[in-house]
Length: 339
Image 1 (tube, rainbow, N blue to C red):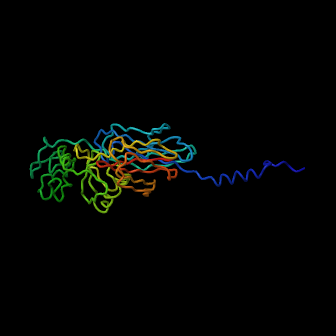
Image 2 (image 1 turned 45 degrees about the vertical axis):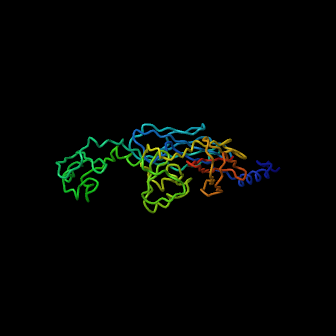
Image 3 (image 1 turned 90 degrees about the vertical axis):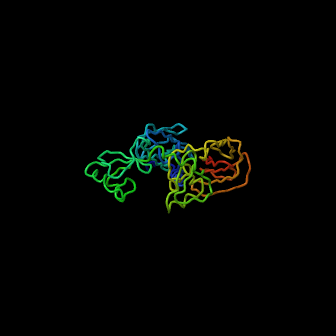
């Protein structure tokens, strides 16, 4: 008698193997942003982080947050956000990872930033003068910065000739002095004369702009070439790759600072399956619109619109998109997700 087969229907096994072989799982999408958005903060700093996550072929199981590679928390509830409080001086980097119901994952771009000690007024700090009997720990003000005389044996240089040891200017000043940072009254001195950032303008190395309440400076060559790039990518503090082009100079109280107002865009429904309506919460007209896919490729650009709202989605595939709008007084950037 022939023994019974353990698999009486072998063709079913073949079918199952073929089915799994042809199945392609799509990883989730995730985008991380911070508020306020800046390259530098003053201690003790509080920074909020918000992750937008979406899975085209399933659902998001959880989102994990990492601080410089170390997991600090996770959440399975949308909105996916965390708040870091009382950050001390130092370098920081934050990433977020989305894990879907099939255990597939995606990692966001890292947000890197610096927390510095609070600025101190120079009014009570003596101005540097050559050969003034400085010793270790002596503090002076010079050209808008504070300096401290280094410990022995370096302190001996603090009273040297100014051409060599004037803090910040002498040929060998770093042998004698430690730079404690800019004086408080100097840090905001140029805000009132800083031009607002305008997408499409031509910027070069050292150009300073005000945007969303913060001042920025265009990096030296070769990075300066990005300063005039598309706003979705290089708008200071807002673009996806803005740190490649700009350096944050800190908060700017000037009324000239240009507000990006990224949270003043209303999209309904969102995420969407067929179409969605884009409106501004302000009464301004939308003058131009640009839509990019998740790889930064421009899908369409339209100018001279003069519209109160846009209808998007008819010809879009499932995925993640970046929408950039401009009005007469502001620029807006928002992420879109089509199911």
